[in-house]
Amino acid sequence: MLNQILNFMKKSIIRAGFMLTGILLLSTSILAQEEKKQENVCNDKQEKACCNKKKDATCEANKDAKTASFKVYGNCGMCEDRIEKAATSVEGVCSSEWNKETKMMKFTYHPEKVKVEKIHEAIALVGHDTEKATASDEVYASLPGCCKYERR
Ligand SMILES: [Cu+2]
Image (cartoon, rainbow, N blue to C red; front, side, top):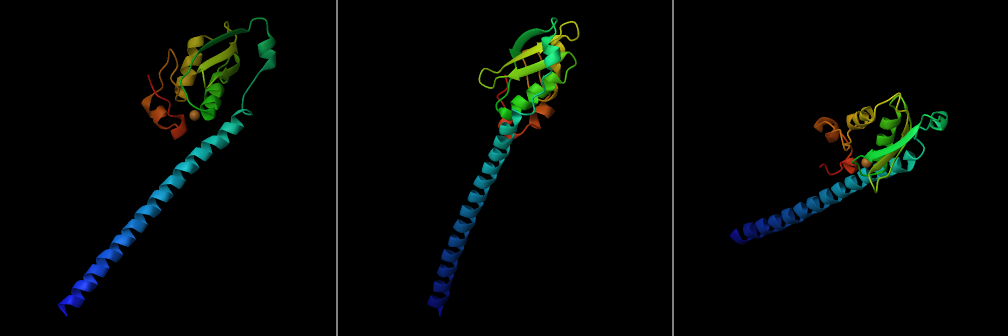
C-alpha cells in the first residue's frame, strides 16, 4: 500500500516536471515570436519611409535657398522618416535627407525665413537628440524599440 502511494507520488512529480518544461518552452517560443513581430513592423515602415518624404522643388530652386547639415541621433528607416518629416514641417525648410549610417541630416532651407535652431528643436520634439537640442525623456521613451538609439 505504502509502495503504491510512493509510486503514484513519483509519477505525479515526473508528470508535473514535464508539464512545467512544456510551459516554459511554449512561453519562450511565444516571446521570441512577439519579438520578431516587432522587428517586422519596423521593417515594413522602413520600406515605406522612402515615399513619405516631403520635398518642395520650387523652394529648393529659389536663389536664397541654402544647404547645410547637422548631426541627428537615430537608428533606422523609421527614424529617418520621423526626422525628415519633422525637419521639413518647419516653415522655411525645403527638403531634408537624413543618413542613418553617418547620422548627418542635410537640408535645404531659407535662412531669411528660419533659424537653424528651430530645426534642431523640431527634431528634438519628435524624440531625436541633435548636436544642439535634446529630446525629452518622455518622448524618447515613447519611440518604438528599434528606434531607441544610444543617447549621449
Ligand atoms: Cu527608428
